[in-house]
Amino acid sequence: MATKVGVVSLGCDKNRVDTEVMLANLVAGGYEITDDPSQADVIIVNTCAFLESARKEAIETVLEMANYKSKKCQKIIVTGCLGQKFGGELFAELTEADAVVGTYQYDSICEIVANTLKGERKLYNSCNEGITFGSRILTTLPHVAYLKIADGCDNYCTYCLIPYIRGRFRSVPMEKLVEQARDLAEKGVKELILVAQDTTRYGADLYGAPKLAELLKKLSEIPQIRWIRLLYCYPELLSDDLLEYISNDPKTVNYLDIPLQHVSDSLLRKMNRRSDSKSIKTLFDKLQKRGIAVRSTFICGFPGETDETIEELQSFLREYKLRNVGFFAYSREEGTVAYKLENQVSERKKQKYVKECYKCQHAIAEELNRAEIGKIYECIVDEFTQYDGQYYFYKGRNYYMTPEIDGAVYIASKYKLETGNFYKVRINGALEYDLSGDIAE
Image (cartoon, helix red, strand yellow):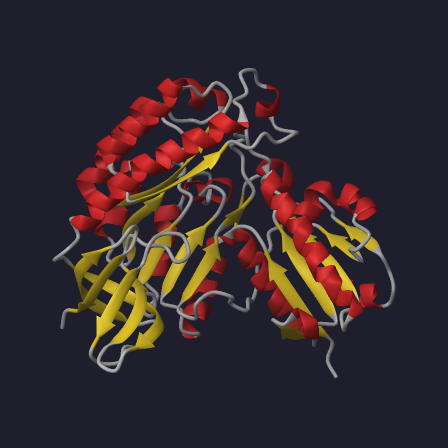
């Protein structure tokens, strides 16, 4: 019988792609994948180490999985960012882990599993800065796939550990991305979500200048792909030419995830961000003019944050009315420049600022959602939810909704719909962050 391997994936969607590559490698190596840890001979936990909370979750998950060792499980293997950044410490102290693996060894995962099963306890975390890329077993909805177009980061924001974990920015060659996208499309994927630590920088290292628009054009030529979505676009590289392409290409949806982190000039400088308040507002004026919806994230309570800078942030939100926003309390990470900055903010005040910002954004979201009633949107159907004897109900999304991150459109239909297909939906209700509607045909 084939050895059964269970895999738990933590962290961001970029980490999810790494997990999907690892799953494909395991299957190609003759291992059987199970989603039931009680049936696994080996359990792999692919970890995140970006924040203290993520590291805590990773350790707790490893300890939870170690409980299965008293049942069928023989070995626990820890992979990913935690193993890459803190491998030596983790290997020494987390004795429940039978192997600790960094972010550059996924191609060797079959050999690592085999050696671990033989009784070898070892740390694998070299720093060759390759890119995890190859065949994948999707863990998303069957009609949605993330396409990781680059790894690493050159921005060195003062609060961020990513360059110290993932290394310098490295793009995947364009021909490889197009080939993988075609393969995914042939397997039923209709929505591609492009991700990297800095998506807008794509190609600068390989081709001497950013080539995101050129990549989008090639991906748009794949017939089966209906939507292409962009996450993690740094504001300073959103050029007029790129915005022109996005707003005119029928397949690249008019939606951008732009992690601003703040709009206060003093805090942006301390964060080592490349933008300032004036350039951000100039960009958002252009986005509004083109009808491009925006999701963003903001850090609350960074060293030097005050009631005045929080009010400046909320004033920006009220002026530009972003569709989807996330707020996060600043996490003081040892090893970053910001760790040593003066004027650290208390945890109580950080949480207060987060709560205030969410209250502000909640009112904005309610206003935007009420204005949607009566409009008709093309929506993709993600899943069937129930049938009440008269109507079939589904969960779907319109163009400004990323799966598992943003809101959803709850759809009622008198006839069955096909998941993964697109339908015209008339919006007839506004919920807290979601919408409801019925089929418009």
